[in-house]
Image (cartoon, rainbow, N blue to C red; front, side, top):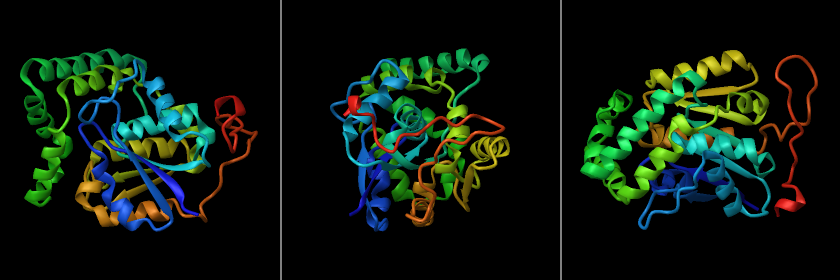
Length: 273
């Protein structure tokens, strides 16, 4: 029986980002969801980051623990799901995602996300996408075939502006709790995946790895922030390996030096079913 692979795209993305996984991963049934505030009509945006994870958990129901892949914003929501509902997840591959800001950085990022939300509301989604695509974070995508970039832009413009503005305000990085502790505690079943050309997020991943030696960090050569766009086949193959059945199971409690590891249930508690 195939295991479910829950896949969560990034800001302005769509579930189509993961088509390559559906066609290449033989041992999984792909469940790629549209994030809150995305699509047409836009789905409701829960008022907090944690509640968004709870909504995702409710969509999974009571099935066996799933494998999880999240990219960028989807990776951040994947960390929230792992933190709040650990019994629902077997293994997680977090792609190009921030673990959460320190307290002193939050106010600036909240202000940036608010400015972006107002740009969407006052000048339209296309104006925001124009600014978004000029970010240095996406510079490596200049190597991508023009028709693929055109498809990505079409996907980015396919959403309702009000939904994207709400996502920026309520689920932006400034509103996200820090999940650095979750990563440390859950390290045996988390893998961080990042493009080798994505200097910012590669640096973040390496610092997390230095703090938690049990954490797996994998890179995709010749890819930047979005390996699914820039190196889809290599990325799919790496994820298939990371989620293989021979990978370590959900860990039991460990007592010793370093971060404490809480008990992780193999199934959700009965009252949550």
